[in-house]
Structure formats: structure tokens, C-alpha cells
Length: 250
Image 1 (cartoon, helix red, strand yellow):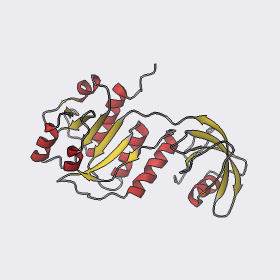
Image 2 (image 1 turned 90 degrees about the horizontal axis):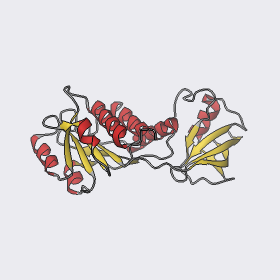
Image 3 (image 1 turned 45 degrees about the vertical axis):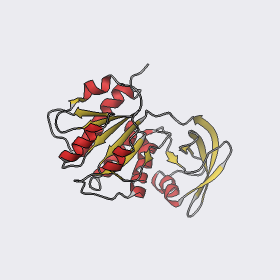
Image 4 (image 1 turned 180 degrees about the vertical axis):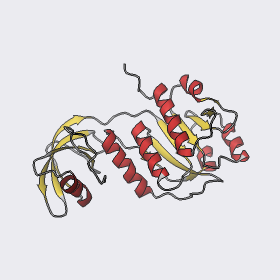
């Protein structure tokens, strides 16, 4: 949980709970969430908060009882349904702790539907701590007002990813050389998509050939400078969302 209050004055704190919410239901929140509400935000019994469950949407609730190690929250009413997020995956080679935490947070805030860690030949970090990444995803969703959580897939090899690739899903591949302009490439496509970002050392020549051989692959260039892996991922996500992610107000 955040160490300091993350909510602007006048807004209600939001919490994710991994249980299906319903009208007039009561749930027990765990010690960490109760401590955040009571010790950090200094809420008292009777205070209102918002809950979301990644199933039914967002709900208004009341802090009904504060115990020594937990708290009881009473659900009062449905505020909005679970959102429909743009069908975009981020496939990325894991990077060092701290930077990967930042990456999954920002990908969640930007609206990505699925996160897929991918092991490549030059990947330095070959394991990910899913529980830690999931906690960062939840915290980001709580603060950016998402009502859905992006799926976090298990780490997979690049070969497995490509061999099982759904051909109807366009694969925007951040190529170090020979790619189309990312703005042009993403401006004329519809349907499900994914962005593939390699490790800090880049893909090998053999990996580059395998990726380009996929019919769904679209090599893209992210500009004249060499970007760090996390910078490249967020840049590509932002451009895709601007074109296809519903950012344009209708």
C-alpha cells in the first residue's frame, strides 16, 4: 500500500478486493488495507470509500467496524460497471527490479489489457516475482480509477510466444533497425494488438528474423534515439492508445 495518502482532497479512497461485491454485502478487509485506511488516511468508522473487484465494477462502501487487525466494510451501492479496456497486450523482456515495477504500474495506468513477460537470449532477469508485480498493478489501478486489472501472464520464452501467437492479433515489434514509423504504423489498424519490447541489449539477429517472419508482425521505429526498454514500452503504448485506445473524446 502507499506510504502516504494518494487521494486528492474531496475524493474517496479506492481499494481492490478479491471477492465478488454485491448490494448490502459485508466484507472483511485485510490488515494491510485496514492499516492504510485507519493509520495512514486516519479514517473513522462511518467513513465512505470505494471498492472494485475486477468482476462487477466499482461500489460505494462504508467503513462499518474497525478491529485491531482488520476492518469490516459494508457495501452500499453500485457506482459503475467493470470497464471494457482496449485489447492491447504488452509483451516485454523483464528488466531490473524497480524499473520493471515502474513499467507495470504505468502500463496499467495507460490501459493495457494484458502483461506478458518474455525471456529472450539477452534477457538478464530471467525470473519475475509475480506477487510483487501484482501488488504494483493493484496499487496503480486503485489510484488511476481502473475498475479492471490487467492480466499478468507467466513468463514465457520468445520461441513459445511466437509459436503460439494468434495471427489475428497484430504484433508491433520495436525494432532497432528497419522499422516503420510507429505513428504511421499504428494509425491505420484496428482489432486486437500487442507491443513487443526486447531487453536492454536488444534482440539477437536470429530472434529478429523469427519475429519478422510472423505474418502478424509489424516492425516499428520509435524515433532516432535508442530508448531504454521501459521508455520504449510506455512510448509505444501511449501512441497506440492515442490512435486506437479510446482517448479521443467523442
